[in-house]
Image (cartoon, rainbow over all chains, first blue to last red; front, side):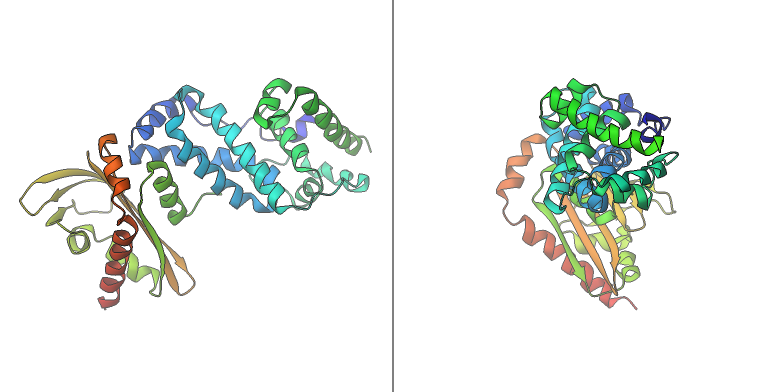
Length: 185
Length: 149
């Protein structure tokens, strides 16, 4: 199942080391550097927000970017920018999704549609995948994004979401088993 | 997904913690509004108080170096980024920006100003006229755009 969620794993990541220099300049009030940071970071923030916030992705991206830019001045270590952006973004995406979505339990019949996830890059989520993800609790989507797309370990995913590692484990288990059933059918 | 130019300028305003930011819908077509905003040499001295001249090299380059000349002849070098619906200008001391997006028959237009040195930020915050000044700037842009043939 990991192959499906990792459909975009080969995608090149932004040049984070180069961004550290831009972040330093941006924190000192260099608007041109800030603009370049925005260019680099927007696709990454969008990639994280899309599977969590779904149809409210645009709101989540704007809220996440605002939180990133407002908070950037307080970031002590520019080298930690990547992980910090991930944390801020996932939290904002979850907040927007919870504010806007009516959560429903996953219908087992619908899980079969997740086959559509195989080979799907992160540029767009297919309508089927979007539909099934929309029926998952927001925190399951967030765990899937962090563990499968971002390949974080349980402890790191728990830190990002502010929950216990055991909770990450149980949520991931339920989400993964849903995917597994889909591919075994 | 990429953010539109007005959202982009709003994000920079948040990052710069500036109070000198405003956006408004103008009942004028985008092309007319942006013709004024992007004519930096011709229009900026009419839009910005105490700016006598803004020298920009000709051409369509998206990155330029410009020279602002104040009323007493003092000069400041500016780095300029210019693209459709987007203008960002920065000197050692100040940042200025404009953004525009078509919105139906009209245009959403935004402007940003900020002081760069950390020492000037409290002055900037205390200067409560930020919103009023930026809205006055936008009104001037609209007036000059409406006057264009």
